[in-house]
Amino acid sequence: MNSSVNFADRLAETTKRKESVVVLGVDPQLDTSEAPGIPEDYTLTRFCCDIVEACAESAVAVKLQLAFFEARGIEGMHALSEVVAFSRRLGLITIADAKRADIGSTSDAYATAYLGRDRFGCDAVTVNPYLGSDALAPFFAKAREGHGIFVLVKTSNPSSGEFQDLKVEGGGALWEAVARRVDGWGAGFVGSSGLSQVGAVVGATYPAHARRARALMPRAVMLVPGYGAQGASAADAVAAARADGSGIVVNAGRTLMYAYRRRPDLDPALAAGEACEAMRLALNGALARRTPASG
Amino acid sequence: MNSSVNFADRLAETTKRKESVVVLGVDPQLDTSEAPGIPEDYTLTRFCCDIVEACAESAVAVKLQLAFFEARGIEGMHALSEVVAFSRRLGLITIADAKRADIGSTSDAYATAYLGRDRFGCDAVTVNPYLGSDALAPFFAKAREGHGIFVLVKTSNPSSGEFQDLKVEGGGALWEAVARRVDGWGAGFVGSSGLSQVGAVVGATYPAHARRARALMPRAVMLVPGYGAQGASAADAVAAARADGSGIVVNAGRTLMYAYRRRPDLDPALAAGEACEAMRLALNGALARRTPASG
Image (cartoon, rainbow over all chains, first blue to last red; front, side):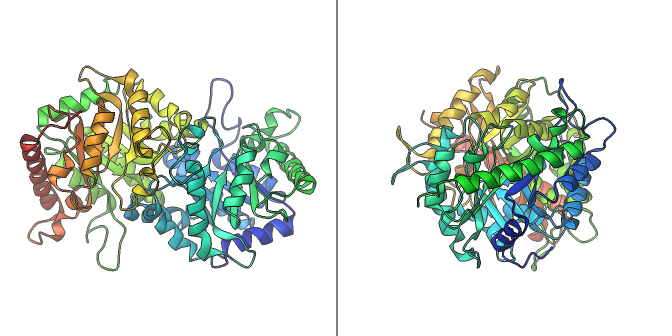
């Protein structure tokens, strides 16, 4: 890992080299009455690491959904540290999907946890904007050391509009006000790629919003969730790309990790690897076919 | 622990019995150039548990600030589980200050982590409203089992107004729109105390907001941070109480845990115990003197 390189430049370089905008979401679900979260004969660590390895050629990054590790207690946190270390050894960029934010001294501790040098330390982290600038400042301080920050702007869940779409003073929706601030926060962190280390989460389930988001945040790397299990198509998922196709990475978690449920002839790793490569090709195809975003 | 009892009723009963609205914030700071986060000759676990024990008579609950445990890696998470277990053994109500929220399946994992039966499981949790209802639904499902949920409404940090104070369609500020939704979410969870298991975080650094918050959320238990180190007075801190003085608990973290820095004659536990009892009396005095909130 070389965290002193601008995160956005590193992501852009990796995207070009691997011809991929795919992020593997490591989301090891909890058991349900229908299906186990971890396949029979696997441990949590082995399941995650096998999937990571199988997707390492097609994906540029892994996004670790912390909730599924925290829900498994100390053993889960051990597994998290092992999956982070394993992903780094494979040269993958690591994103801690934490969605944290708190008062300054507490956010500082979160930044230490997920962008620090210890075992949970990743290259980038997702954060929540509700508390405003000073709650995010400790994360931006880590951007000065080369790390990436993805601020939730417009999320992919069904009720994301409940507050995010409220019209606010000055015009536009709340999420647009957040987008404008993200653009401002990121201004000091633009690398040679023209992209900023302060990026945004913009859900693929709302492609019209994605194009508007690009107009408001021309320099942001957008982390796009919602592809696959949440219903967004490849064309939807790349709607926020810049005119040259850069500036986005697209996450899929369950769609890749549980691909084996649709392919009983394959083991989990093989099924995930195939699905990940298919996703890479589908997104590249959609990028090639798209009308560049206005703005 | 008896988590099938309505959380708000349990908190109200404990408040009455102990004549206290004090919540001990277990916020073991990271080391800085000026001072160590953990006093010399202490471990993280021993420091936290000694402070919890010293405050157990004067406080009704402990609020564990997860960031400071996560920042210390696996060892920190071990300590978290030990401090939760120790606090429960002393009969203290436990609040996981997580400020989490994510898409439904992920929030479900967070709810399992912090309101479940495993080692990080607490009686209540703090959550962030930015993603809307479906991101909070898994937490509300746990309220059905007796747990408490505190939704961030108006936070205590300097830039909390950046988005929370934006005027939104329909009138009022964003935080007021969130407050109205909290009141709605909590309607089905009102106990015999007249208080709901769906509560709110309303910072004491904004007492005028606190009174308005009470008008908008008459049934909410409000968790009030900002007392002490963040600058709010006892009168400020109780501004959101109901006319009969009920419906609030007030948190102090650094002010109690690091009281020994102002009292070099005392060890950390003794200093914290004294400061906690002084806080209890100051808040009770402020409650006795106050003009009941309008609304």
